[in-house]
Image (tube, rainbow, N blue to C red; front, side):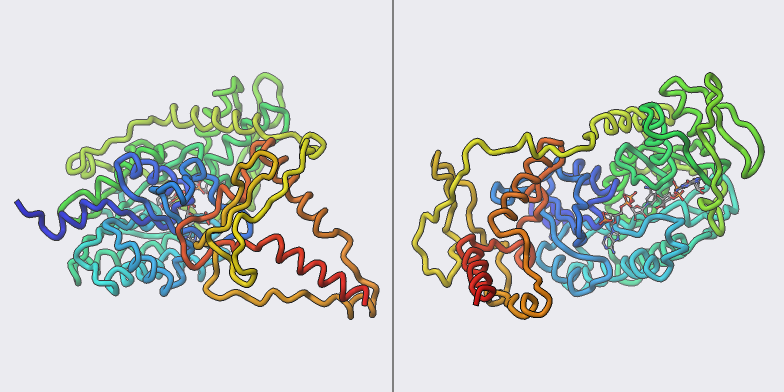
Length: 491
Ligand code: NAP
Ligand code: GDD
């Protein structure tokens, strides 16, 4: 029997995830890879690495990777269209967002642009490239839509009443998904997810802030944890369970919206108590309102205080979800209960904090015994950087770098030496670190980073992008550049 167009398109198993570097993005990538998908992810250009949550999934681009990263942003329409046109995804998961509720009060316009209009841009990009009826679309909707709740528990039928710029932006995204489904027959659905946490949770969300503080207090590195409204109630589950629900939604023939929740709610206060108890500390509460404090019952030391700066202009006091529809239609159920979640997060943070390197330089440990020299294997024309060029460690003959096309730029600037002559003449400025010392410093710092447990830059370079990435500047050209500067200076 012939496969339908839709079935054949789906069978390709090509997913695109916005927000791949976030908590949910990392768990979803793991899940999809385990199911045989090729996973494309959009990452934002950042001055420091933002790929820590997915670095364990990284495979060198030259070894047929199944996770492929593209630079992009939900605010950049052309970029989204070009990525979708190139990869023609069978499933798109729109997880990218400015996801912090409190921050959305400070950055309301940006939040609206990314979290609201961003969803529209992505849907339109799918339509623009002619995939309206083929690509399945998941929108990361949220229990924040219920805000000042009008009924408890909240289900797919509960009316919305958002209480923050974040909630309002997500409300737009929710409705544009419904509208495009109804208007154009897009296979788009909303997952209305209640709070879900994990050891990979961002450090400024309340659960992770608490578990990290508990670990640091245990290790004697922190004295007190400052929180806002500890009476807020949330329906907290584990992120790994929730990404399974996202995937299940997109496997349905009929796109619909689903609540994912545990059906239990707990106060922030309760989370604090359980987190401390995991490491043997009983917290007793004293005082009221902003003067309330959590005290270690055994030692009398104050471990939790209230700080008004963490209050929100408008608060969501209570969230409690009803996941019956997901249970019935998707066979979805949370696996991790509240106690196990708290314990996993506290122990995760304890291990992570313990593993953090101490202060002090490791450079003294990193002196190379033998300085390798790199030689060109080919004699290509000096004016052209040849993709076939490799660098060998002259001592042992091992290939240590190769030139690679993806890192070339569409157009390259001329390699002209900068002239420092005027600066030297007018105010006697000259560089202190010469090229040789600079490269040595960088290499040693990289080695020290590796020894200390952080990764080198190369581990994080997005592969298989054609238009971005680092250009390999050949050492002989750099040397030429530097000697030219020297000539200018001495002339
Ligand atoms: P998260 O950890 O904060 O991750 C957000 C992701 O979005 C990150 O990868 C971030 O990139 C990316 N991002 C931010 N601005 C972007 C932009 N302008 N363009 C493209 N990407 C951008 O959030 P999460 O907890 O994984 O949540 C995933 C999604 O579910 C979010 O949409 C969130 O609003 C929604 N949600 C979460 C929960 C929950 O409890 N976790 C519940 C309901 C709904 P960087 O790494 O570069 O910052
Ligand atoms: N972040 C934070 N920091 N929250 C605090 C603090 C604090 O110091 N003290 C008390 N809280 C309270 C907040 O006021 C809120 O009522 C509750 O703890 C949970 O806050 P967050 O962990 O920041 O999460 P959230 O519920 O506001 O939003 C998260 O869940 C939504 C789903 O309901 C985010 O992940 C959103 O992106 C998501 O949509």
